[in-house]
Length: 133
Image: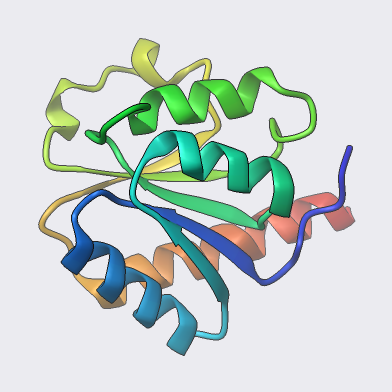
């Protein structure tokens, strides 16, 4: 299993304004952030950078967030990387939809940036603690 980069996050969001603010707020929280506008580019970056986590929108061009998380889970090199899924359509996601993915948390849009940063920080910390145990 590839060692995760402890401070690198990948943000995948097709809306430029949301992508920019999410990336900036996570940088302010101390993360190194790489951001991408579609799931295919995000998946390539995940494979290359081995981030500590991925924050992705659900509905995107080329590869949606659910498909991105499934592809990550199916690849032994990326299966351990947690995903936070951002969606305005979370009510449509069932346990079966996300069970074969790397999704650890679903965050409904609109969301509080403070809450998102807290969720990412808590998830990354708990995942790092679990690996160390």
